[in-house]
Length: 363
Image (tube, rainbow, N blue to C red; front, side, top):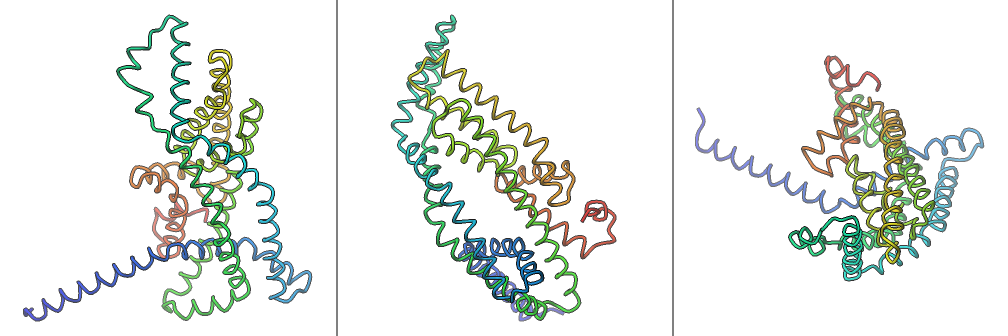
């Protein structure tokens, strides 16, 4: 029979557990940047580990010298990338950042006037509609300079993060066997093999996923840049860069990038004739972006993602769609990595389940 003392002890124990879990979650939240550094370093370790093994096996380098050489090559690649692109991003970003909110609203008012004249010339009276909706005052384009400035600030603070990631990656590569032995001692004996297999498989699939994502974004960026350069859009590099980054958000990102490209194209062409210059150029850019997105959605994205995480394209589509309904944009962004982790863990711990067998047959 339960006494009041036993009940009170149970309540206190539950409260203590809740407090400890809350403190743990708060601590994880406070060190989230460090966790991100560790995850990025782990991905870089997985990507560069074959280079270390090649140097050790073929060129007979010592482990430490092979790791130093690999990290040095990695730094050279990153420095080359920065020297090639960042000055151009900063210079063109400075041009776009000159478009302060007041100037954007002024340009928007001018653009609305151009559209009004175009409609009037085609026997359409838009005045009542514009007066009722008050469109120019309702639209807020603060996000353009703010979004751009946030990108530039992220680039300016990139150095510290890069140094931290490279430092952690160096020791992950150099002492990977020591870290592995520590992990083995911590894990429960009865689940050690399953957990280690899950970790290795998750790392392999996620490293392939991030490589595939980089390839996909690079392809989209190159096509976007080509479209903008063909039609002579100013600040083509930075616009293509921003629109490619937005493609990280599945399905919604391309739509936002099309709208952003259309707005910036119109603003860049202000001063020209609306009917013969602004409208046709904007339509051509949109058509070019839509063609790129059709190619990306139907060819490069399904092939790259399905091959990297070994999931069917329809499976990926449904997972992203469900995650979007449940958790919004963040859910769509992290849907594929989280789903991949769940699949690997489910296969290791429940290999005989019929549904799991079907879903994980390619892993």
